[in-house]
Image 1 (cartoon, each protein chain N blue to C red):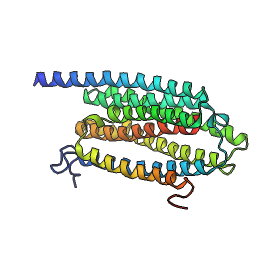
Image 2: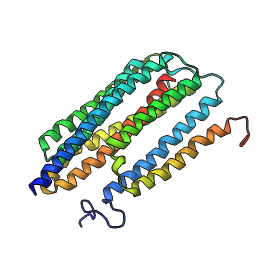
Image 3: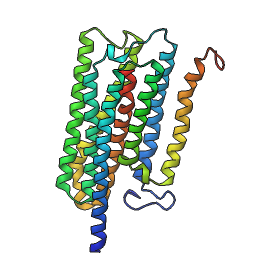
Image 4: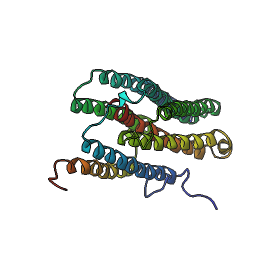
Length: 104
Length: 196
């Protein structure tokens, strides 16, 4: 019983170290995002870089703070299905603006 | 009547009801913000001209707010970790810090909004500002909602710790999931509105 409690405490300590590391990474990436925007890159490049960094930051929050990295398959399946609908939702306007290939 | 599966795991889902419930709610939230992001893309790509966010909005304030919200996510997860270590006092400190950081975020937004209104910049002024106020306004409501739940868990809700600590820990975890989601949304809102 004592060993189990000690193991549990060590496990939480390990998690806390990860949280601190992720926190520092998020801070650094925020500064990087703002710094890159100062270069006034072409819109396509700027959007790509900004969304790439935001995706890394979002993944860190989801995986470690929200514990998705060790979450049950059912929740991952629900989120996977949501991601499909989300991508379709975002793709609809993008497809629409190409001079009416699909919807005019 | 007792609420089932608050602490014990359901056989069919492998989860507590609260956990699956909060994730289904967050999935619906993804679609809510997704619809607004899709509208933003449609309006922006269809516009002949679109202003860079940093020519209208205050980037230093928003950067500060981003760091505040990220910090609040860390204090939130540390509050949960404190309960896992069975330290209620430390939980109170971290949860208090989370609420305080949420308050700082809303205060900064109040000054941002006030400055815009003072300069006669309203949602009706142009499409950019309409999207800015809609997205950040909805996000602010989420921050406020999360603060209310966290305040309950810090105050009267914490009595549950004495009778059922596991259930209370699960509640804090679920509240934390919502709070991290709010942080996650801001992570995308910040570059989209302020920097591009």
